Length: 133
Image (tube, rainbow, N blue to C red; front, side, top):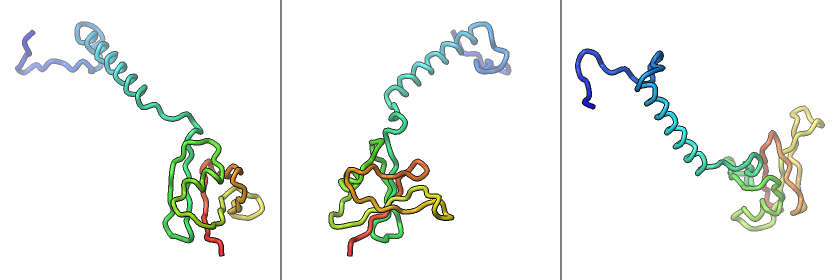
């Protein structure tokens, strides 16, 4: 079918009121095809299930700018955290958690045992790594 040209352009298949005729069936088919493509694309890039990835932010030995990583685990232990540190040595590990004891509503709690699950603050893990003296 040849394209029309002239003062009366062909209406867009997405204009309101085009609910019948070939334009409507074309629109429906295009939407179906688009939905299929979206489903395939979405299926290829499935986001991890809620809670399987944890955002971890930490300060290292008083540095001004923190480090941030995403780790694929829902219950991160101190041992897992230590494995991710590139610098080896003797450190103390503190993690922020909610606390009613202080006006600010939070404390940095030292975690000593490698099998301890790290505390979360507002759904995230925020830590400080300090060199032992």
